[in-house]
Amino acid sequence: MRVLFVASEATPFAKTGGLADVAGALPGALARLGCEVTVVMPAYEEVFARQNLADTGIAFEVPLGALAIPARISAGSLPAAAGSPQPRWLFVGNDGFFGRPSLYGGAHAYGDNAERFIFFSRATMELAARLGEPFDIIHCHDWQTGLIPAYQKLMPTHWSAVAGARTVFTIHNMAYQGSFPGAAMPLTGLDWRYFNWQQMEAYGQLNLLKTGIVFADAVTTVSPTYAREIQASPGGCGLEGALASRGQALSGIVNGIDTDVWNPQTDTSLPRTYSAHDADAGKYAARAALAGRLGHAAPDARPLVAFVGRLAEQKGVGLVLELLHRLAGSGRAHFVVLGTGDRHTEDALKHVASLYPGTIDLLLGFDEELAHLVQAAADMLLVPSLYEPCGLTQLYALAYGTIPIVRATGGLVDTVVDANPDTLRDGTASGFVFTDFDADSLEWAVGRALAAHADGALWSGLVRRGMGQDWSWEASAKDYLRLYQRTRHAAS
Ligand code: ADP
Ligand code: GLC
Image 1 (cartoon, rainbow, N blue to C red):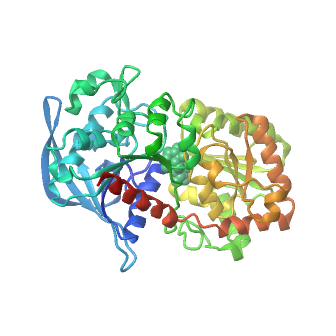
Image 2: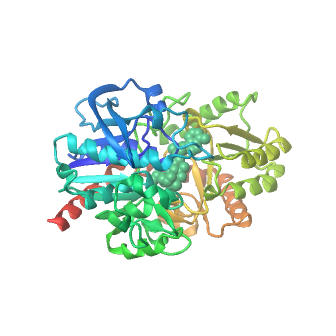
Image 3: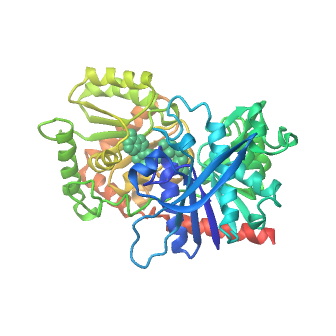
C-alpha cells in the first residue's frame, strides 16, 4: 500500500499541538505494517532550525490565482531503529510563505493563511504527480490540506499520476475550519460553481475543512465519541449537516502515543527513568528536578496537580482558573500549569499564582522537555476540556503514572475510565471523570482524586494499571490500514 500522508505539522520537525504528535508517529507505525509512506509538510523556518534538510533538486511553480509561486522540495529524515522501515519525509519550501517565526501566526493568524495553504495543497498534488509512482491512498489532515481531496476528484486529468488514488481526510479539531472570504476562491484554481453550500462554501465563506469533508472518499476523526458528537450541534461547529450527510463515510479512530518519545523507561528529559516497578522513585526524582527548575529548595510533600496544554477555551482553562481560586488556599495540593495562550488568560493565571506563591507554579511558554518533566513529576493531570477530539496529554499521563482527571467529552470518554467501586473492583479504573462543564464538577472530581491519593494502596494500584495500559500506535495504525484497504476496495 503506497500512502501519501499530508499534514501541516509533525514532530519533531514543527509542532503547535497534538496534530504534530500524530503526524510524527502514525507514518512510522504504518511503515512498520508494510505501507510505503511518503509524508509531505511545509518547510517552515522551524524545520530548518531543527534539521539539516537536503535539497532534492525538485522545483516547480504553482499557480495561485494569477501568480506563479515557486516551490522547492527538500528531504529530511528521522533516526530509525535498525532494520525498521521508515517513511520518506518531504518538505514543500517557499521562503515567502514558510520562512516565518511561527507556523500559523499564533494568536493573530497570518493574513495570508489562505494563500499559504492553498499553495501547499496544490504544490503537494504537483509533487505527488512528479514523484512518478502512483499512490493508493492520500491521507490528509485538517483544513490546511482540505483542498487536496477536491483537487484529486475535480482535476483528474491535471495530475493523472494520482487520479487512481483514494483520499482519506482526518479531522483533528472542528473548531479550526480554514474559513476565508469567498474572494479567496479563485486562488484555488477551481471553478466558482463549486462555491456552493453543498461543496466548498459555508456561511458565505470558502471553507477548506468542509471541502475536505465533502470530497474525501473516507472521513475520519480522532475518536469514536467525537465522530458522533460532530454530527450534531454544537460539536459540528456549524458543519454538522455536512458531517451527518457523510455519516456512512465517517469513522473515529483513537490516537496512539509514540512510545519512542513518550516512555518513562527511556525518556531523556527525566533525571531518572522508571517503570511501573519503581514509579515512586522515578516520579520523586522528577519532582525534585522540577522543584529545582522552579526555584524551590525541595519538592513539596502535597500531591502535585498539573495542567499541560494550550491555554484555550477548548481546554477548560477557565475552569482551571476557578479551581485554583477555590482550592489553592486549602493547602491540600500543589499546582503546576504549563501552557501558552492569549495575554488575557496568561494575566489571569499570573494573578492567581501571585496570590498563592509556593502553591501555584506557572510555566508560561511552549517547552517540550518541561512537558515531559511535568508529566513525570505530577500525581494528577487536569484535562477539563469543553470538547476534546482525542487528547494526548491524558494518554501521556497514564504512561507516566499520573492519574488523569478529565471531563466526559470526545476522546477523553474513550480513553479514561472513572474510578468508582465497580471499576476499581474489575480493574478498569484509570482516572477521575466529571460530566458538567463547571467548576463545581471539576472541584468534585479533584476532591475524589485527592481522597483516593490519601489511600496509598488504592493509588499505587491505579498508577500501576495506568502504566500497564497499551496506548501505542500499533492498534490504531492497524485500524487506519484496514480503512485504507476498505476505501480502496469500495473504489474498485
Ligand atoms: P491539542 O492538539 O488540542 O493541543 P493534545 O492533547 O492532542 O491537544 O496535544 C497537545 C500536545 O501539545 C501534547 O504533546 C502536549 O504535551 C503539547 N503541549 C501543549 N502545550 C504545551 C506547552 N506549553 N509546552 C510543551 N508542550 C505542550
Ligand atoms: C487536535 C485536538 C486533540 C487531538 C489532536 C491530535 O488538536 O484538539 O484533541 O488529540 O488534534 O489528533
